[in-house]
Length: 524
Image (cartoon, rainbow, N blue to C red; front, side, top):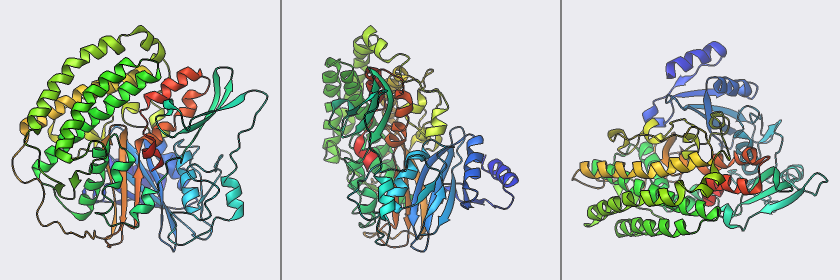
């Protein structure tokens, strides 16, 4: 597919030559240097070819700012990197938010952190920050925010209007599953609009990465997605390994797969209980936490933590499996499989639950292209897109497993996909345990101070919420020049304003709960 897309691109843009890049080393197949005057046409080309915008970020090279666009395809693996250089003194570029809805938030983020103004953007206001910020945080030099830009950024002021009234859903509200605020315009019980306001948990992980060595940043990954911490831990470690050419032993790769799937089940169980609690059913919450405690006990014995794991290391693991690990996991597999029938009777077949989620929050197959949503959210629409199968890592290429999908793309399908994923994760763990090899759990002679070669890399894994991407730019020092985290909850939440529009507020709460959001992951 790479060659076909390259040829069609050259037909459309004969003056631009796509460069083929070794995917195994860089994480993308084609590199295209675009200009401000053709980026809109290029984005339109990839949209017409069925590509989604996987990520959009910015890198400050001091002499210029570089906008980096990553495109990918849901059917066949073909990652494409497109860059646009802009003047650091007056950085600007045309918006592509009318082509890809997800660019709407990504461009706002780049504007407030780097000062790049996107011409034609309809709502260029603060997304994470506030008017007390007087400098662009991710610029390499101290660049102050001019007064005209501060007025634009701080222009979101909802005011009462005759055709409705405004409510604040959150930031302190159980149904937001964290410190998330949604400014909702209401007409009676119906939502006319919903505008998420982020940043209440913003901790600048990407800025911290520029001030820490690769080893020092290890604990940070788990602080973003505390429910899928092992998956984030793996995403970071695997990216750096790929950048440095480090190969983890086979035993370590199997253990990474097993523990990440346990972590996935743990995350899904918490979501399951909390989702049903959002709809008024508190009993299942207690059962799911009872099951989840078993996983936490198993992982604590090996990783030394119950939540924010930092178990994986560059080249392997912190330590080998606990001597009781295999027996404990086998017992848990038997236990959880016996509980699914109970959950079926208690929740899945419950007529009250069905009426609260069936045909509510319906997404069609166009949403993943427009918004870049992933994980159970995209699979609920009927698209079998899973990074573990699409772009295998660890030992997922050696284990056969099915990808559950929905048919309607509603809240019920998102629920059913996650229930099936827990069953499939048990199968993956069982097969990995059966084939678990002996041998070392970490590579030998890993340098205490890593200094990757100059260049960049983009690597992805499948977190419990979807596609996690880590983009690192190295300048050959022991500190990342730029580190970017593409997190799934962020792009999944972007769909909420469209789905909530015109719905009852009670139905919108069900839709919000079906996303399985982790707010620190969004805020980063």
